[in-house]
Length: 454
Image (cartoon, rainbow, N blue to C red; front, top):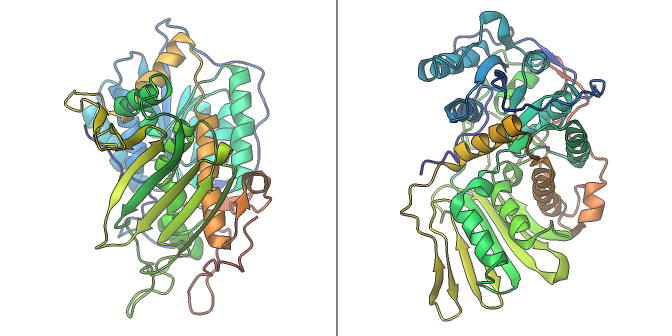
């Protein structure tokens, strides 16, 4: 099975482009579109369903490819938006070459700029939201208010106000009969689904009492500041390293593993405490000041769930270290081991294998299954709304960040009510980013015991 764990969203600036003329546009992020009373569901009537892609980076282009690769008929890519014309054109070319009969994006439906999402939403029936996560709540709000079905990537927010916005709009989506799927693809992976059935229905490991979830690897790309860039252009280019755009890697990547803990335990945690910092994400001689933004390179969090169940969470971006991306759960009768390469199995406490997934099967790519099932729900008007659990799991990752940044135990009930908003109410290329460098060009780093997080 092919997976795409390293295909992250990106803002692209072509090397030869003018830095000061870079992608002018605006985003009215905090302005809601008026609610419509019309529902927007499709029966299997043969009607053509128009797909809009908002964010044509690696993951967005991948999601569009999967949407067009579905066996369901009648779906066409109709409009696209991105902050970069070169990126949009490259994505369009690749998708057209692979899906010539399913790509119908004319030049007047290619929108460049931060306000392009609004134009795509007007043109389409189903929108794919794949920009940096900070924008997600407001793009989701606009799509739902306009009566459009949605596929959106994870995580779905970078702060508690954004989470509350997603949960609010999830309810509106239900009221309108809209269908929503999200990019937590392990929930669509057969070995995980089978493992959950074994745990919940066949009780193979007994009652879950603890767990461990991991995303430890060498990290992701980093992009240097280019001559002539404004601060906003630089942070959008290097969005992964700024919390108002990314939410830190505990959220952007590790949300996958945290989501599995919530799924198998059956609820989000009630509190978290932990530690983290920057051991290797430090500028060296010759580096551009502030090269690594403001995020940590490691987090270790202890999540406490109802009934005292505790899950230890590790995520680390450090090269040359022990890597693992997986989950495990300890029950009263045994241990369950999960991994997205289909090597899922359970043992008793003597080491005897009591269940093993047959990973020799040719299972369908879970990234593809997401879109197949979303489209089936749209065509046949089946209930479908992943926004609730994705918002909960994203909030769990943010709870972990709050715990590591603040150095104190943080209660779920306090965290979800936090009024600290990282994402500005309105973003244009002229906006002063909320993360500001000091006189030397470095960004403030969270200090445990000092930084206010709730």
